[in-house]
Length: 231
Ligand SMILES: [Zn+2]
Ligand SMILES: [Zn+2]
Ligand SMILES: [Zn+2]
Ligand SMILES: [Zn+2]
Image (cartoon, rainbow, N blue to C red; front, side, top):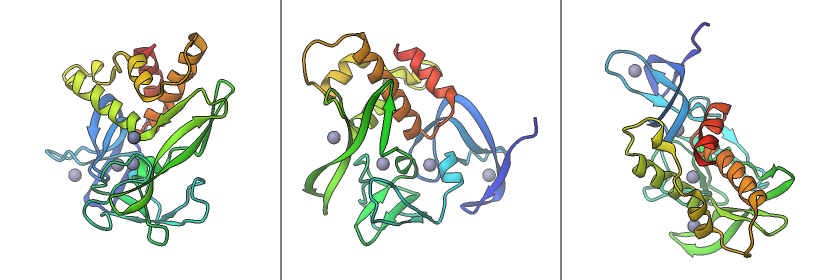
């Protein structure tokens, strides 16, 4: 099969090639973590690598959660200390921003869906209100219509970060194993008492899907890899 290659204006000297490895990387565009498929420079000693959504950024974008906003793409955040309205983490590279509404999103966070349906359970994004770091609102969380589930996107990014540290990045496969996922889930969403297998099944599929989007791997590779690891 022919390699899929293209240039990106942020790296005009070499073409980037689509590759997929079960191994984490740091995107040179948005400076966030990635896993699975990525666009990589294969010239000697050049490790330039981009998420697929950073590779194919559009000049403007919209998100269903903010129907009144149009986002512009930029290589750099508006100011230092800019944080993402979805995951609440700092933005250190590629960004979509809306000046009017004072909103900033990582390119991967922009891909999070406003609504998701997992095995019949309906999830919808909500935003918690807060006043800090200069913005009046921020921090997405997913809530299920049945009220049994609530997941902070920020908490999910912390979970990814912790699993990275546990895995130490030495063993490719353990680097993404979310050890003790049920414990972690309980901490982030403790409501109700008796929870059967169906509860955890939906939670795991949901989390796997969200993690895949956050790490820029919309393919089935990560989804199945991760799902096996946390099952
Ligand atoms: Zn990126
Ligand atoms: Zn290069
Ligand atoms: Zn984000
Ligand atoms: Zn949080």
